[in-house]
Length: 82
Image (cartoon, rainbow, N blue to C red):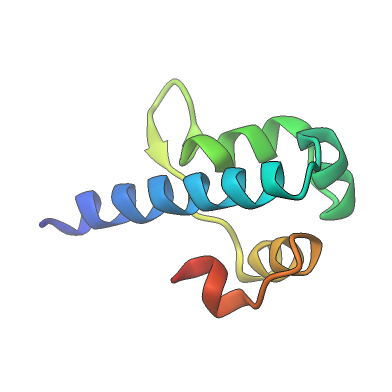
């Protein structure tokens, strides 16, 4: 698996996990975005595994964003990215 495909797969799986946790906790994308100080569009992109829809580049969230997501979703960071 090439580095690019590894990045794409990680971004895709992370997006799936964010969506799963968010919906399980009955949190809207808007509410999650507000909690982590990002736009709703950014949360939508993260859940889709993308950083840019047109270019189809994989999401690459900052560590600070991942920390905020884990806090908002009430899950330890290692479990979020596992």
